[in-house]
Image (cartoon, rainbow over the protein chains, first blue to last red):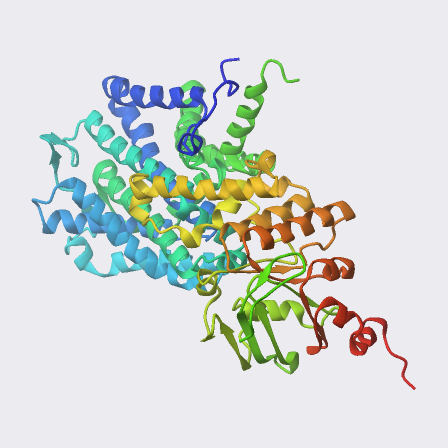
Length: 358
Length: 269
């Protein structure tokens, strides 16, 4: 009853093209944002921030980035972990080389550098598609991790081979390093998530999004209606890597604080983000959030149930956690191959008519 | 260059828009098109017919730059066209539809037709990110043109439906809409009526004639239904085994002995 579009008439094309055409959705969106900004910072504690909220926000950015590439432009990539590493190491080098540089610029520049690297590794996509492209991007993953391990310049010749984020503050609040308050780190990441999700939505609903989707759905027809495949694919790789680079920079600077490339940005990270995108729903910004939430929350939830409630030993619980999460992914893909976003869409279609479906 | 003339139904046929001169196209050892020349004049409906495998679709692919002929020249608007990529040719104002529907399955009807406007949309990536200034105004302006196309093709009701869910006849219509949205100077239609029933064929013929009549779009089409071709085409090229065997008005072509032989077969003695 509440959720309805009857009587909600659009009188201009601009109104018809808005992101949330249904009033109920629009209000839901505003309330979520108000809750996230006005309430969450005050109830946030260290555990929630570190275990759930920060990884969720940071991975959501990465998932949006990968979704632009795979879900919108149809170019499969397994190099996300490597590109996150580029973002992280770029942030580290910038922070240590230019200590006065504002942390926001550091993060944005890291994204920009990753975008360039991503476009470079996106060049093969002009010749190869599908599985073959996936393998080519896999090469990027291994090459980048190897590079950051082998060339000491990237970790400033530190003995441990690790990079660690120096303390930086924004408007007098510490955002990186050990002294950052959870609420500050949270709001810092939330700001990035908000702006980037909004920009992603705008890009994908406009001309660029249509170019990408045209390439995804039928590249020959796309070329014949005037889409330059080279430009469309390279912008997709560039934008996607920009997002993933920013996620990598945030993961390193704000969340982890210190990182070792093989451990933090290995192939598992690529798969983790790929799972988020597939489970959340290809070609959906909301799906990226849903997928990130699923992949971040599920292990925490299972651990809490198995260790906290049932008092299993930790090692047994952590092994079971892999089994259960893996099983859930398989079940999920069988039941709803189009992901959480599709479930949400179906629920909305049902709700529109509820409780009088005829 | 010929003088313009007025057809019996009052349309003006102008000067030559596109001229194919001695086109030969080979795939390895197979010659798909052998030394074919013909022209397309402004405002006319030009049909290309011929039995299966005659090289008709290859001819369209040459016109919109998907294949590059080994020999011969393509002249467009009085200038020789050098080898170009298909997306560059699209920007010159040549749009087409496909024999097997080539819609973007994951997108709605509206988005599919909006893709036809891409060659007219200039706003940059950053403007689109912000949805400010240029991007939104451009989106709305192009939406208005697309809505005109939707009205013209009478597909208002399926505006927001994903095209994958549409029946075949509608998909063909959406594909025509996508080509029309580009406001092409030359519209290429590859079997626009394949697999349609009589009623759908009548609708499609009406749309093709209306496009030609109202917007003055030059049309080149491939079609197998002879009744339709003879009714709507101004001039017809007949191909067989990659060669041109006839060219002229429907009446001339109908009475051409080579064409009759190609279609009905000829007795070998």
